[in-house]
Image 1 (cartoon, rainbow, N blue to C red):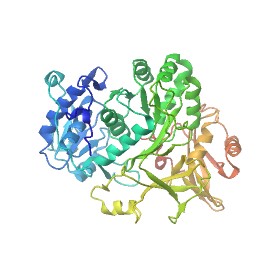
Image 2: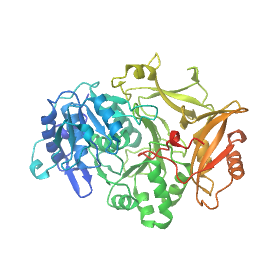
Image 3: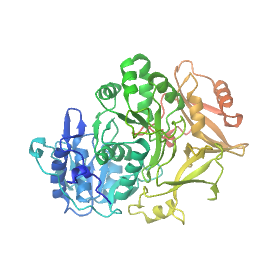
Image 4: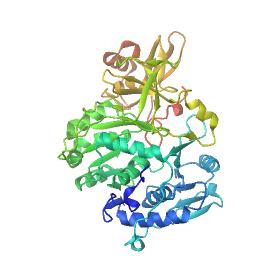
Length: 502
């Protein structure tokens, strides 16, 4: 396998030494400076043995620390700085890192105990003029990262992600999005997840392009960076919702987004009404992609806006509500509850997504039972996500099997499409849909609503008729409950298990 980062290993096909690589606020590194600082750190940790933890704050030090671990061939364990003591203690015990990398001055919690600490030195003066580090490229199956899942159904599990999965995903996205060294990515995503770290930091570095991290997401930063030459924006639905809300009163934001070559949303479904508002104001369509910790990226629309580069092609416009088609190298199928494959691409038949391909993780660390349960006998990974496929093969996610598949009156119903319909109602700010036991229907559909006007929320009958008119009568909510806000995790996903019990 070729080096993960040709521009950092002395490969003559890599990026020019003086080309910008990373920028966090006012601090930045060129490829030469990154090669020197990460290479020096790689030399220090290459003999550490085992794994290294990375205190993954949204800083230059986190990016340099992870790159150094990859250059050294040492698995990196990115840690969420917002983790509670119990969760952090579990992850540290489970992953058993030899040391932790952190920015100078970071105060680490007591859960780290006496674990050896190395401060990441990002000194561009010392790095200037240093030669790129030529490294041995480990075997493709060598673990690159151990990323812990959210732990919604128990303690977080460490997904072991090999180097070949990182390379396969980033190269497949480069093919789908025509991602090149000319691209400048802007985002404000956290760096302890696949989205912000692998796609948002390692992606630009593998291409030889650059990334500008906002530190903290804000529409002002998006406007500034896109007006200053950035070509791509990555975000989650919460971020794009804030963009959609701001657009009517911010013509500079609309102008900046209109300049972007590619707007990408992921980690959860982007509501259709936000798609429509952004497209109407900017002329740009948001591309949705689909993946998860264990699989990295699985699907995306293969489309970019009109581009002056002759190599850029359009394979079909993205459609709101779909995550596109499987990426190169990814096998994807839908199955019934008994495991029988679904062959109908009718846009209605709901099944669980199962996948195979070079983008998959190898195992859950220290959990052979969970690893075995996650795969079928013939090697398909059970994602737990439910979807339908349109006649042209586009995939539409309708929810998680554990929380979003509702069996009501003999129908299998995905919560996601009902949530999208509810969000199209003018009186609904946020919506979540669940099922609860019903003696007659098996399960009844429950809508959790955050109204635009808490003093005058839309009533249950109005919302039920609204959904029935857009979807089908059996998909209307039978119960409506009102909240001030929906519980969300740090990636903006709704935490349905945290909804009130009644």
